[in-house]
Amino acid sequence: MSDEINSPVLHPNQRFVANKLGVETAEHKFIAQTISAIEDRLGDAAVESSRWFAISVLRHLKKAKWNTLNESGLDEAKQKSLAEGCLAIKGFATSLRTVTKDNRSKYRIVGFANSKNVGRGLLATGTKAYKIACNVLLDSGLLAQHEERAKSAKDHDVNASETKTASAKSKRPDLRAVEKTVVGPGAKRQGYSNDEPIAVAENAAAVADANQTLFMTEEEFADLDAALSKNDGKIVQQNWADQRNVDRWSRILGVLAGVGFFVFVALLFL
Image (cartoon, rainbow, N blue to C red; front, side, top):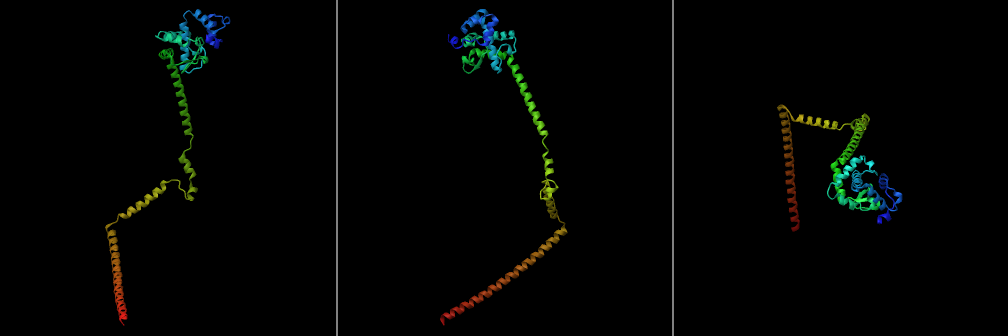
């Protein structure tokens, strides 16, 4: 009876079910009384309980925000088909009874988290009932349709972004044109160049001129060789004269040194 004390007020979904079945909620003091009356009117409460649970799981998987069965976009027949599909799988009914044991979790849209918090309307995602409902919904193709719509929306956003980027690029100025405009004749007079390849061309021309000088006729080569030989002869003669001068001065210095030494010895013995 803890749920009756902590949550005496019916959830709007539960009040909707009760009103649909003709249950007078004003006569009930506790939520358990209303839930009991609902199940008495339903006869087969399993399908209705499974229907609310399956749609809640679908809402969680789609990350939707709806709060009623009709907001799911599925008609009642499709909702009951999903519920019956879940109940047809062994272990679902037993797990669902355990999961919704608290009356606050029955006949209403609930949320899901890693751990349950009945007071906040949250059930755990690790239960057998949740996993079976997920598989049934996947087999139904409802999630695939949702994912396809999400993918289409994402592709649309990507295409819009690419179009915007291409448009922005097309509006960018031509950098080469800007460079030619900025570095113009005035800049040339100040020592700047508007085109680096000009210097390269000048260097190439200089190299070509140097290469041209390497290719001479035989007569030009003979003249050059004769001039070099003549210069070499002058250089040898000059070097020989210089060497003779050096030898002459060496002999004179040697004689003077000998005379000086003799005079020095003679003075010692006088």
